[in-house]
Length: 313
Image (cartoon, rainbow, N blue to C red; front, side):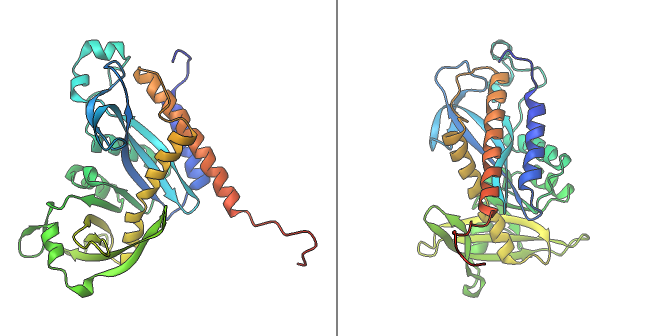
């Protein structure tokens, strides 16, 4: 924590490294957050808040992360520590945790926008951006993506409303009216137990805009428990096939694997620092280690199997 180096400069190097070694024009940028369970009230940003890691409200810090997933592999490439309002306005706690003056309260979608803008500047132009309903339900976040020409597949809550040509209606009600022929069995990528098969429907809304984009509601339905559904707003080129929207939606699993590997192999959550500076330094180095491992895996998996001695060509 006392050495002289810039964690944000290393973060920029990390982003460039991921673009160089794992870059893929069909890749997906994924926004998600993870919790870091903590004791006490001294660690920067810590408070009782929901932790996806624990699946409940716990005393923790929350980091918002940007991951990249492509054919060559996946890795974390940016991070922001979420600073709750209670911390942002407490001068004494800020001073004790060495929180810089420029660090203000920002919502998680606003933190995501910052990271995406940095990724775009670094040359990362993925085919899609995806994230859960925290980001999909935020209209300003969606407009930022559209203004930057970035196609997206974002989850939304079941009560999110869309104009269906006659009235604004909830997406779960729109899905209820879809005919049987609208659904198709498609894989959402490989899971821990093999391919993840669901029924999917995609319904377009509105006209194709001036740049040739359109809006879809994508619905994922469990093949046996049909009341279990997930909903996604998608905007991108009008000729995008349903299978491509499904591929982008299914890419979200990669960030969960990134968190698992970063914590299990790279010590992402194994820190005792309390300061703002210390958190960003530790997390950035752990992320860089994860990216190096991802690049090594990518090279190893793409290398042809060696021939046995004596085998004919």
